[in-house]
Length: 305
Image 1 (cartoon, rainbow, N blue to C red):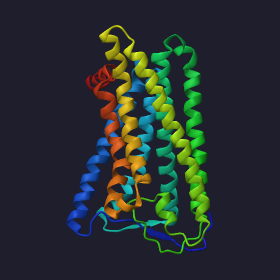
Image 2 (cartoon, helix red, strand yellow):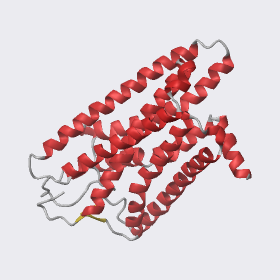
Image 3 (tube, rainbow, N blue to C red):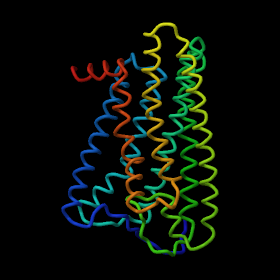
């Protein structure tokens, strides 16, 4: 990734100018980060240790927790370090690595949520074929395909973004490195190539979103036909957490990237970035554990051992 601009460091957006507020942000984000580590770590441990949870749904949930840990660990530690040491700098290669990892984890999470919607669709709408369509080998193949394709996707975007000449300074109007903020520093029309790739990515993401919506339309139709109230409650208890996680990820991410320019401002952009990059990894463990009796039992068993 050659760059004719000879930039060696970038300057990230600071959360505050005064030292007291910087330290307040550090302790606040430290608490949020530890909560994300604890919540996702407990889910990973519970699923790995409890053989009753070795099913496709929990296999994908384990993958989701790993991605959540990866995404929040990509952005928050650097932001905390900058607040603690009163600095804004990130190296050129550090910025490239952060952009690659964040793109990888965020897109992989959305792909995994799409796969999880398919899992719920088969479990509720085609229960007799569940073991055939979602055996252990099929689950591993789907997870590997998601991770592999997203790795290539993030690599292409990162290489393409950092091959664009930059001449608009090195100030990034965000607390971490992301593609739209890097493109703002471009000084040539070559950035249109990356914009084209982003449009293709948005189209693919929209296709995944439509797949999720159609899957849940079929799921709700099937659930409402279940005669017993207990059966409907059990079906909803496995679907609603996933639907809540999808809604949280999609609504914050889409609004952050597709909001009208007329309402855009540095403060709003910063707030939306925190919502879509920090909130889902913290909230997802709560969403999946609150209504899931099997997972709560596994977590309680883990606590008592």
